[in-house]
Structure formats: structure tokens, C-alpha cells
Length: 331
Image 1 (tube, rainbow, N blue to C red):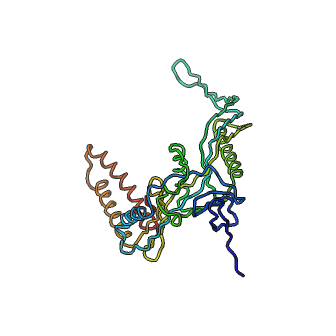
Image 2: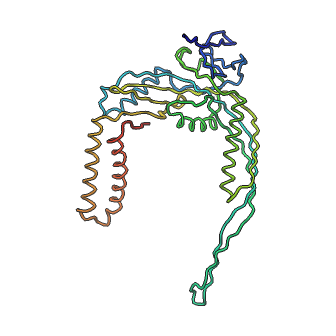
Image 3: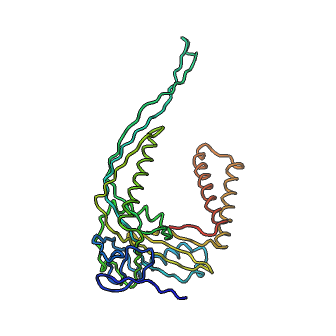
């Protein structure tokens, strides 16, 4: 039994794009129009201009892999495949007002002394006080428009995106500024409607402010948080995802498309690297034993020796991971 792929036609250029059953916000891979499954265009479509074209990004990632695999046998490297992907987000500007009510508990110890200053008795008393307070904030937040999104390094990327949208203005979408032809770029469609995203954001913020209130009280009676979403726009954030082979295994690299920084990378750990790591770890151990137990340490060298010991422990930890791990992280 064959399964026919689902398609949707763009309300702007009429080009068809493949869609999944979960997709509710679709991005046209031909003109970049973003629209709902009901053909309603999303007017506030924003993006950040990528720093590199695919060709430029490939050179940068090649140099990164070459540098990271220098002592691992670079001749085993091959099969670099890179794609530019635009990840969908709902971006919110929200006004938050939160009020909490609870109580705090603290203790005070009273000490009685005699005329000579000796302790005669001590009494510890527990006190309770009512604690109320409020928070008022204006928040800018982003919510990925995918359910159960599985993008390599996504957790590290999201922290950067949250910082980015607070410090750098969004740009209206312009396909000419993508630096590559549309057929070379992968647009991820969205699986969350604006209404669902708003509800998810409100729940997220309410949980966040309830946690703040709980930290301010020993016991929290009530916490009411009102979220007023003042503006909501759609954002496509560019990333580069690269895959390469080293020996018979595949490894991945994630690059922030706006800054050009490597966010996450899988680096192979080979036998050559294990041997080099073992030799380095052995040398550190011998030097540390020599200066700790055999050679007398002059007073002037104590600080330097402490610093060296700290360095040796840190290096030993890293080298041990290289000896017994299978993949290291690089950035």
C-alpha cells in the first residue's frame, strides 16, 4: 500500500510544498511566505540575516573540523554535508504582573552571659511573619514552533536566541538577504498555532513567577500572575547543520547562522588521541609526584605548585574523558 505525500500550495506564488500531518504553519520553500494550514498569511514574518552563504560556511566548518581533528588522523575525515536551515519561533512581547501571599519563618537565638562573659543559657525562638510582594516586568521571550523538536544542540542554541532577541532588533523577512538560492535552504514548518503558543507562554511565565514567589516564602499561600501579550511575531532563525564522517562513524556540527559561532560539535576520539592523552596524563602524574613527595618545595614556590596541581587535576580530568570516552564536544 503506497502513501501519497501531503502537499500545500502557497497563497502567494501557488508553489506546492510537502507538509506533515502535524504542520499548522507552513513556510513556502520558493518565495518564503509563511501561512497557516487555512491559507492565512502571517504578516509579521521576521528573520535574522545569516552571516555566511553555504559556500562560506562550508569553508569555516572545514577549518574547524581540521583543527579539531589535527591529532586524530585528519586523513580519515570526509563526506562533509552542510545545510542551511531556518528554525521557526514565536516571539512575544508581554507585560507581566504577579502578586504573591505567604509567610516566612526564621529563628533567633538569645544568649545570656554572666558578668565574666560566660554563656549561662541559650534560647532559640521561631518567628513567623506574613510575606507579600509583587513583580512587574516586560518580557521578551521566544518559543520554538515545533513539538518535541529534535535538533542537534538545540538546548544550547535557544539560550543564544533568547539573548539575541533582547539585544538585536528583528528584521522583516527578505529572501534576497538569505545569501543563497531558496532551493538550497531548508525552511522548517511550525506545529504550534499562535493561540497555542500564547497559552504555552502564559503557563511558562506563570510557573516562572510562582517559583520566584516560593523562594521568597517559607510557605506560599497564593500566587496570581497576569500575562498581557502585547505583540507576537513569527521568526525564522538561521542555523547551519553539518555532518561528516570520520572512519566509519558520522559526526555533527551546529553553527549559529547569525554569529557564525560553533554552538555544538561532535569530535571523534581515536586510538591515536587516546595514546597521546595517556602519555600526557602519565607525565603530569610523574611531575606532580616528584614535586609533591620527592623534591622539597621552597616557600616561594608553594603558590606556583598549588596552581600546577590544580592544572594537573583539571587536565587529568579532561584527558581521562578522552581516554575512556567515545565522542568529545568541541566549540
